[in-house]
Length: 83
Image (cartoon, rainbow, N blue to C red; front, side, top):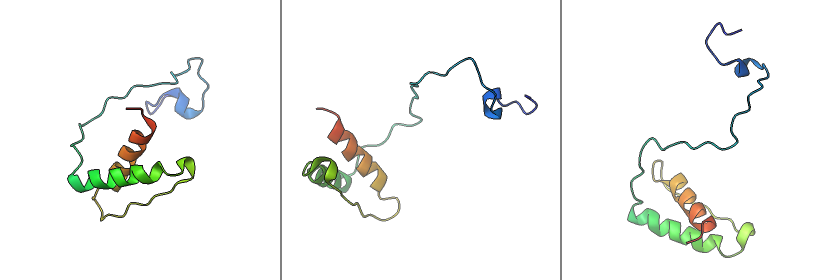
């Protein structure tokens, strides 16, 4: 069953041992701070997200590599975390 070295769980074999529901994974790299244009877009996105709660939608348009995902994640995190 373990001919290729994978854990048995990958073969569909039930294990008595349950993995933890919560895992802490350290970041591989520290992210650099947002650029000024990214901060401005994040702040605008936060304003829009606060308008109608869960019914609000927003779209970020930037060239490839401009930080769309990072801006959106930073805005969502800032929206849901207090402080």
